Length: 311
Image (cartoon, rainbow, N blue to C red; front, side, top):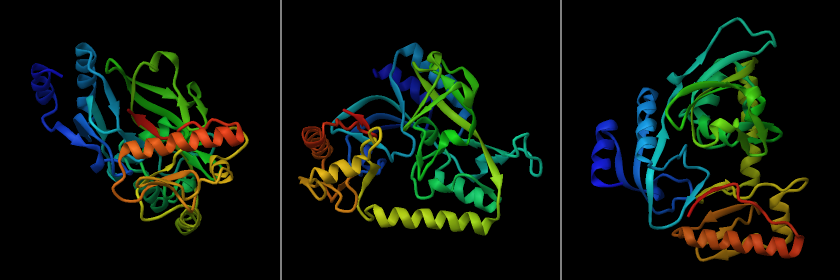
């Protein structure tokens, strides 16, 4: 951005931050700098911002919770948006009146953390998202990537998505207008040139709080048994190929525990790359390429990253 555009952005978003290190925002705890960061809990300012960005032809991206991204070193130009939210941004539509399918509809803003949503659901005796216990990130990110685990995914519970298009125009899309694929929600063609998810409506069912919390504790126990704790990572690094598991292929290739600099394939789970401390983004990327090449050579499968790469 030139100086005039920077001044205009500061007028639109007085809290904009400049030259922000992604090492402080990503779960990998590594990354270069982003030119401009706009964090907001007020969705009312977003339409004007997106219209201005479109007029100025300035690229923008959504960061979400920073749990599934990797930025290379150096400066990344453009505006990066981070929506924020809390449990006050969650609302049950009808306290005692389920819809025709016997489901209770919950409206939640995109910036709400998944952990906050699950705690709210348990407290309000609403079940259906327990499989997400322990997944970091935000509701918006979970919708965009159709996040899931243990046989469940966000698309199973989604009734509607509220969003802005690249020109800042607001709309609500029914879940039936989306296609839910593995780790991806595909929006209609007219929204694929740029979309900002601002909220979602979820369909849940009644259950007792103690039962819901027990299910979540069970899910978290399974995660802890299989996943490394205490070292920065982005969770599952590669998408599972059809009919198989990336972790199994990586282990079959003899790569569990393999290191490149301070980046390492976890000794506990083959599909997790961890930062042992002081890893550079380039070391993580180099290890990613090595894993892809080795698995392709030995198993004939080219693994596709699940982590979003900003290179």
